[in-house]
Amino acid sequence: MPTLRLALSQVNPSVGDLAGNADLVRSWTRQAADAGAQLVLFPEMMLTGYPVEDLVFRRSFVAASRAALERLAADLAADGLGELPVVVGYLDADGPPQVSGDAEPGQGARNAAALLHRGTVAARYFKHHLPNYGVFDEDRYFVPGDMLTVVRVGGVDVALTICEDLWQQGGPFAAARQAGVGLVVNINGSPYELNKDDIRLPLVRRRAAEAGAAIAYVNMIGGQDELVFEGDSMIVAADGELLTRAPQFVEHLLVHDVELPAAATPPAPEAVADGMRVVHSTLDGIPPLPSGPAATGGLIEPVADEAEVWQALVLGLRDYVNKNRFPSVVLGLSGGIDSAVVAALAVDALGPDRVVAVSLPSQHSSEHSREDAADLAKRTGLDYRVEPIQPMVDGFLANLSLSGVAVENLQARVRGVILMALSNQEGHLVLTTGNKSELAVGYSTLYGDSVGGFNPIKDVWKTLVWRLAKWRNADAARRGDTAPIPENSIGKPPSAELSPGQLDSDSLPDYDVLDPILIGYVDGDLGRDGLVESGHDPAVVDKVLRLVDTAEYKRRQSAPGTKISMKAFGRDRRLPITNRWRERG
Image 1 (cartoon, rainbow, N blue to C red):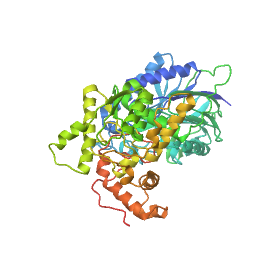
Image 2: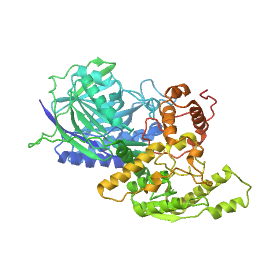
Image 3: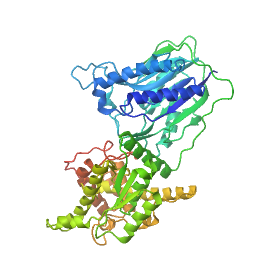
Image 4: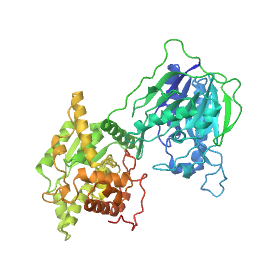
């Protein structure tokens, strides 16, 4: 049986940076060549970054992608890498966008993969299954391909597929079996969700059984607005054996030798399977397999849930800040658990020199909260400042007749004004610190504590915030480092401290009660009856659902934040603001 040395390049492209992404391909291909690779794989839409959203409709961007692909093929050859086949994702089109007046049936923008060899585009493949759920809108952007591309590489027939092709039964993988391929390449831009790695391996095994072939699955890493990609690239044999698996959340070159069945001679005739034409081509030559010991990529075991989420949040925040060229971040540090976790995430993502935390005490801020904020600053080494807000609040109250909630919200808005002023003056990105539970029930002040350009814990339920804090401190202890989050911030009852003795529990059910209801309603789309049947108190359910439904206008104006769940607020969950439908008791 032939052996192919595969190199799966788990890298971090940036949307729109065609030149920078092409440079990544060239540098990682050089590393792969140095490792003796015979076939190199890069992620979905590698050249353009993913997802490009409505950039698809700009014909200038499509043309730039196509030109960048041709230039990349030539540059790889000029680098002395032309003999090494490289599979790379890019944006293509064989007709006007489907939204234009001159659109043609069956033609338009394509989510594409290309195999580059000897300075040319040796083969192309257009994604067949287009996801249109959750954060995906690919039916809006792309036209599905109807052809399976099979390329003979080193005596092995290799089929090209893209991301969602793996998640759906039939189509490319059924056609691959009929074509008798030995390897199916699947290039991905598959966003992270908690425990998705537990789903991915069984899925790859099912497709390997369907195709009767080994699968090389490569996924990108990095943050792109709300999305974060964790990698988790792998190779699975035709019998389902996991041969090698890459680490999560880091760039990594996974190099592994795979024994594969020799291709039939001559190639199987063109056929139609599951509505797809199977088209064959052959590469004239590839680098020989190096002598010496076999290359083994190793097996990286997935980490615990809290560690996985923490890494996702750190990477999402780091890339949002760096890719958008912000020099630093600023946040309000109250001494409470949410701002403490955001501050610790920011320090892990950017380093203490790029994090400014501001204590903004009012007359209702407790001494222990001020001390806890200062303690966190000392533990982490971030830039810590104190800006008392009471004189500014008093200035408003001297000119406005306000009472009750209006005074509470005034304090939050004064804090927001200060943070935005520091942002304008010094160039920081303002981080907001509200968790998913608060966002769900509207427990925030619009243009107050919700002010900011990015929210690292937007998709983190309050109960998970506490778990993350405890995990981060325990992880520091395990490594012999200083725990970043004060125990007082973790243990004390949560409070906005906008009025004397105020606690979250004055307005909301305990979070251990609240979060399961919210998870069922928001993530699970359960109605009132389903929640009550699950064992929740009907009166509490009615109160919570009322809060969630009436807070949609606040959520629509909230900052973006890293998605870690199956249904994040924003792209995942889209409900009308003006909406009279209510779950009735």
